[in-house]
Image (cartoon, rainbow, N blue to C red; front, side):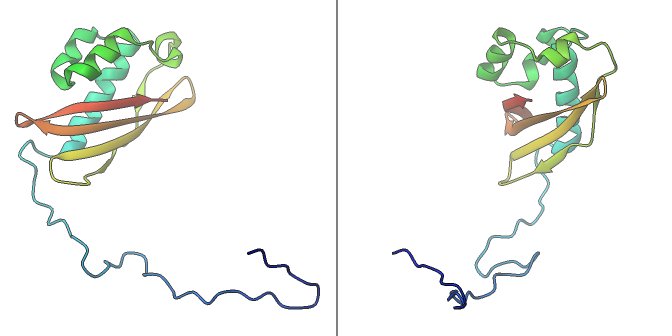
Length: 143
């Protein structure tokens, strides 16, 4: 049903209950205990992985060096896919900024970072999972 607002008549608005305060944990929500992953913290692994991948895309490192860090489907897509133009064509230094890590469940890390080259910023995101006791990349997106 469409309600019309008439000039001079205040609009009726539904009264909404306030939501939870920022940082408050809703009742019944699962709280992570922060137990360490069996493969160690994901942040340094993610930074190294993203740096090595972008160096391989720019030709500074052979793609074969990435094989152990990726699952087979992702590694196959990387070797067969097109490289981002800003990686392949740039000549300036390639800098990967601080890596942001979110661990939605134990053994899974979703990471993102900003890579800079020639004064431009580009987004890089990946999903890491603990496979055979070590972090391996199961998804990668380079913007």
